[in-house]
Amino acid sequence: MNKFFLTLISVFLVSTSFYKPELKTNNIEKYVKVEPTKLKSKIEKKSSAILAEELYKSIGFENFNKLNFEVFYKAYLGFEKLKKAGELPLESHLLTVCDFSLSSVEKRLWVIDVAQKQVLFNSLVAHGKNTGEEFAQKFSNTESSYQTSLGFYITEGTYQGNNGYSLKLLGMDSGYNDAALKRAIVMHGADYVNENFARSQHRIGRSWGCPAVPRELATPIINTIKGKNCLFIYYPDHQYLSSSKWLKTDENS
Image 1 (tube, rainbow, N blue to C red):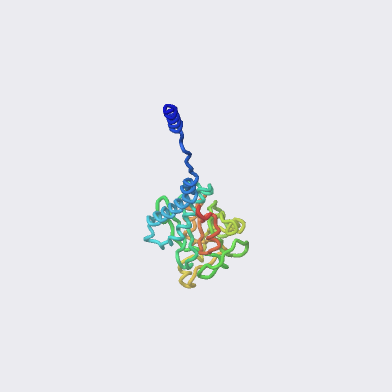
Image 2 (cartoon, one colour):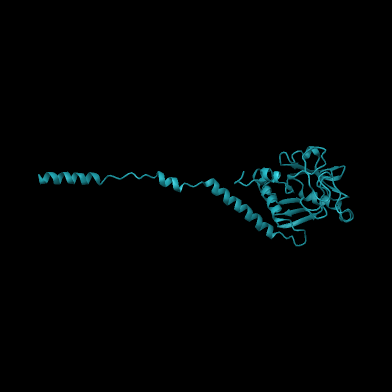
């Protein structure tokens, strides 16, 4: 009898030694699950801001009006997005910014070489006659409005027009400046964009919506930025800034 029970116990021990309890991992997986998309977007957003800040600090503004960093950051963000979207060549390194939150008597246009980290031009620039007097206030994408259009543009080819040597601009913001070619919104030189006019009238002359520059700077500026480069016309318009796809980060796109 004792041998019988000993045999049963031995069989039981041997059989149970191969048993592995099933671990319930559902709860563990639930708590360690990561959302990679959100994590990635936060990293990318931080990286864009850091890169823009580092670049901004390395650009020599000493002999020029200093471009506001927030305006530069928005211009740089859109510039990089246009390249990623294939709208600009990847090797593009010229960024032109017009800050129309500033008085028209200030030099509020900058042409920046982001590769060389230097300002190539800092100039007066006109806004449209129906956009405002000294300060820009109203913007439009409508033909015959004589107003400036906000947003990102890609520079195209040149031609000789009624205003002399001119640069075609392709508007990249739907509903804000995509009628630029139809409206003949171009960069050109103008006699009314000069410091003497600004001193006597407390503003410079105004265009029909074009970003007009001083006559003597038109050719060198146009020849520098023509042919698939980025121009950004800025104004703190909340509706535009919150809706432009070129200004959306991956987190809020």
